[in-house]
Length: 308
Image 1 (cartoon, rainbow, N blue to C red):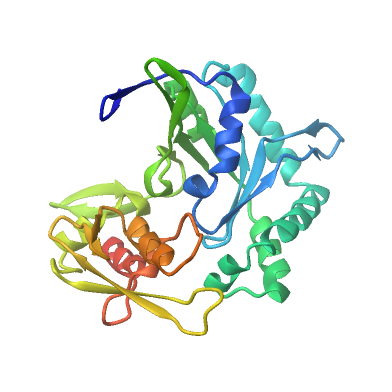
Image 2 (image 1 turned 30 degrees about the horizontal axis):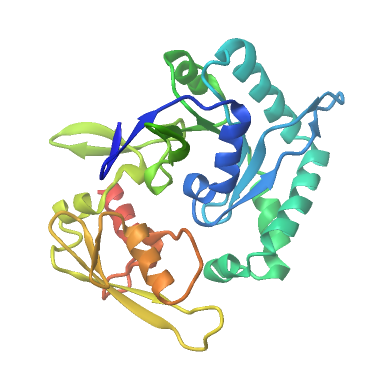
């Protein structure tokens, strides 16, 4: 249950799969990352011409990967519905005609958001080359779902393609069914990720971790950042010739103090700076935005942490 003043929100099932699809489509950046783009559902075919329509496709330009997206409700059988459907989609997505179609859709979608391209240093002339390189890679399977089961996890681990599973929850206000809240993952973090893990040594014991499970607090504990240290973010608004600089002070718990506000997430701290500068962006990658006085990003420090 969620509480807000005198309001109570209780978790409730999605009305249908279409409702979940709409939540994913409207909020895809919170799932696939701030430099992702969402392509609507399209018919793709296997080599023998058998058609299939995934719920969508997501291209993550920053991390150079792409997803077949299938929003699901767990009440649908893993073995009779989800598994065969996704397997067919993977096969169809690997056909040349499918990749050509997705490349065209991606170019038309992405060129309408030049700010993201500018942030990544990609111009419109190189966009097609970058997209072809991404689409040549095997797709990841992206499964936003309302719940999870042992069978779903076991099936995901058997796939050759990596699988990311995010839990999306729905809450309604008690006494006011029209007031709805959707819960999405923090920092684009999937609950299940079958991609290769990083192995670190902790207290003479091997420990497996994911990159996005490393927190700023971990970096402080490892001595890579000091409590009270000042981080810098530079941002150039689209309609301005001058870059603006924002500063954040990191406290001992890994929180960020920016513009008089406290944030537990580097990405939301960075977003506060961007919006203060007049940007209408809804998401940003704080791990690549904030830098130390030596020019290292938080992502660089996280990589150093994993190497150690």
